Length: 393
Ligand code: LMR
Image 1 (cartoon, protein in one colour):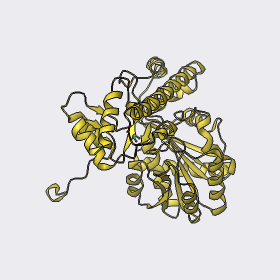
Image 2 (tube, rainbow, N blue to C red):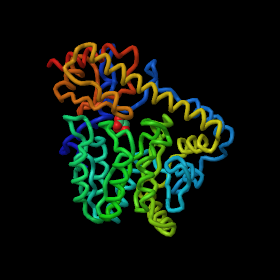
Image 3 (cartoon, rainbow, N blue to C red):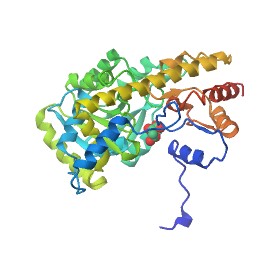
């Protein structure tokens, strides 16, 4: 390859910001870009349940030999219990390197076994389009967010889904839609699942934030609607956020067929494709997650820790909305407390985002997405002051 004739690739919209942040020498800089949970002191700690599971693993682990291509059966069952509430005899699960690995694996399967067209929400997570374009899929947008109402653009959303052709696929966010924080209601999920079944398209559900909207159980609402419909779909799980396993690259892809027979066929293709992409998954994070999920005591500790993360984010949402209102900003801030998950889709323009970064050393994603999970009592005033000032620009 002749690098001197190759143009440099653009920095990643999210992780590229983290690099720029690290290189920023200004004291007091604040990173509200990448979706990473921080506690009130600004740290991203290892969860107690994770530390306890690691202790067990350190004592009991006997080999570093390869995992099976699909990961261990234990892990698959633990993942199914988590995403469905119980194992599912129509489902095949493989352990993947993070949620991104699951999405890429799904992209390869869709390229081979669907029409090759994937519909994604407008907007969606910045990396979705890159992943699926790399798999060779043709992407179509469906309307999702109404910037005026700061809610789901319901009529346009359903009208667009009505045009999805048989054999196409639709990417949906199970909860805590990234970047908008606007989720479907239970009735809307039922309607989407019924449309998929009637019109013969399949869903790929990105489940990266289970536990960050209402609870681990309540956040299954979309997956449950699809499961009940009896139609085929896939679920990409990430345990980066809910187990805090970011750098351990821990995820899963689950395909759900119309009957138990389809499961073996699906598993054969999942394994064939995974083998080509990454051979077999990294063990450590998956072993931590399955150790926790199979141990009642550790599961209880984990659920408490997850609840505490969700509650802290909710309190930061309230403080942000209040802080902006106190500064008299010319904006109805109630959407901040209504949005779900780690992010607030602020509506700030590119110029305002640039102002925050260049003048105030506050980093948020170019779309105006703020990582509320990165706000703390210590940085809240500076952030509110800076946003209020940016709105006057
Ligand atoms: C995010 O949206 O910030 C996270 O999902 C992290 C990432 O990989 O982009």
